[in-house]
Image 1 (cartoon, rainbow, N blue to C red):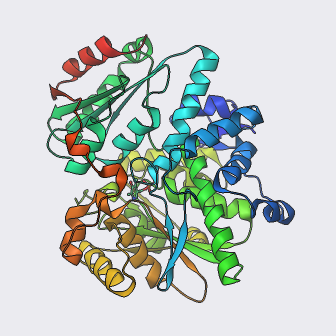
Image 2 (image 1 turned 45 degrees about the vertical axis):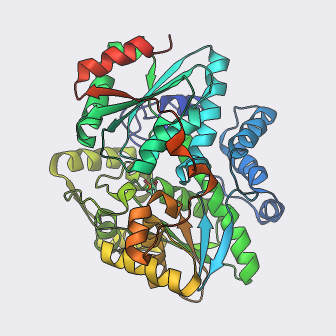
Amino acid sequence: MRYISTRGGIKPISFKETVLMGLAEDGGLILPEKTPRVSGETLALWRKLSYPELAFEVLRLFADDIPTEDLKKLVEKAYSSFSHPEICPVIKKGNIWILELFHGPTLAFKDIALQFLGHLFEYLLLERGQKLNILGATSGDTGSAAIYGVKGRKNINIFILFPKGRVSPVQELQMTTVADENVFCLAIEGTFDDCQYIVKKIFSDLDFKKKYFLGAVNSINWARVLAQVVYYIWAYFKVSEAEGKEKVRFSVPTGNFGDIFAGYLAKQILGQGIERLVLATNENDILTRFVNEGDYSLGRVTSTISPSMDIQVASNFERYLYYLYNQEPSRVREAMEQFAQTGSLSFSQEKIARVQKDFLSASINQKETLATIASFYKETGYILDPHTAVGVAAGLKFKDERPMIALATAHPAKFPEAVKKAIGREPERPEALRGLEDKPRRVKVLPAEVEKVKEFVAKNALL
Ligand SMILES: *Cc1c(COP(=O)(O)O)cnc(C)c1O
């Protein structure tokens, strides 16, 4: 399998090179040259597999430059940290299926990709005799999932910046109580924007970046998208069998378009089976406007109770554009340049019609989200986190005779304040969150200054 850039400016590369490159060197995103479509015979075999076995079969189609025994071990290690025997159980609640993606160590779906990516990085670095210092900024979920993905991994250090006192208490505890010496949490005296600015500034100093082997783990890494393809196929098997139906729909709470893009790929790989994907947004509805009206224009970021979806520019959107523009890199380049200049793209009726063959979309505001948590609890006894509730609310709007599978992207105990507002009490804390308050914390407070953070990284980087 060879990989190309959406902007056409790199020569085809292998899977391993793709993982280490992250963003393509021409500024585009990396995609496989061809998406494999799997035959009915193969699907019949896949149906019987456990989650890690299925993950191995799907990944090996794309990661064909890693020896199969090695890949198998990486996958097994990645999913051994999950607390549920089925890894991603699918359960029916009322009229809808819930695909629980929060049984990993940080209780959010990002663990599914980042647990795998951590082991994969370690493997590739060892093979090449290289080191990696990961630098990132977080307003919550991604930071802890990235830390848990690489904590204790050899040849990797991780530096995560977060705005001091401005991430949720649970999320701050998850990050700062990690004891592994390769983890550095930096509480920055500033906002999340300050943290992001500092990280961008440091990455733009190419000499510094090179000298200290800096890298990122953001959601555009191809291996992250790929690991997420697996649970769509998995859930499709479970639900189509339980309901005796050949076609299903998924509803996906969406921010950076990474998760739902994985669903789009799964749809291609299966050929049939996934009828459409429901793209669910909160008040930050740029992607809903895109699907429903062909209007992709930037708004202001609104803070909501589903903070991991408070995004305007969806970093994985370019991957979908590449297919919408019939895999013509020059069209993608043009569109991205236009968007950078004007903050807006609009699409023809013909394109909108094509988009709507793959996606349905609804934007769910916070009032409706809280009302959904409350009514779902009343009707089924099941507590949704606010992100999942956005997906469930949108999913129920588009529920027809086909089964609807809503992705549960976080455990409700990560967002106790919102849940309490909706149902009058906090959800019970699962094992992974108990006793965090009593653990020693490791965190360094720094002013919001690029030079101070650089100094710290230089002193603590692996060389
Ligand atoms: C990251 C995240 C999302 C959004 O996923 P994207 O891949 O960015 O679209 C939704 N819910 C939760 C809980 C998340 O952490």
